[in-house]
Length: 147
Image 1: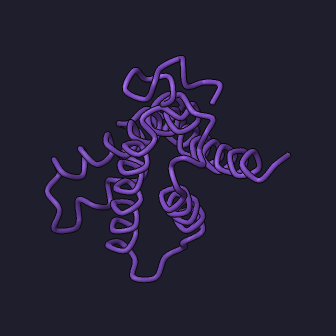
Image 2: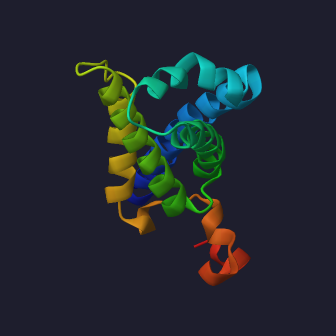
């Protein structure tokens, strides 16, 4: 495998891995537990803070659906940059929330995702050859597949 193919494979792996992590978390929140139950399990404690309930409730829905939808988009490589930006916001919200409830908290779930996300964002776009974005008309559509 040449260097270009190795880079493309590495980016595909990183993007798909991050996508799977987020997709499965969102899937669990939406289909296994449902967002109202996730709210009562994880978000109810935020009602004791200065945050209004509508922000807390909106955050429960935002994080759940962004993780599911953007995780899927990363896996297939469609609207990659937008998905990464929305997931970055998701990580900032989660980090803020954890820090708001406890001054010292466990970073084991946030840091690996943040490292993958930042690495993918810093990678030149042309290295990510295997993605559905290449099928979009503004990117050359189907004519771009074999380049």
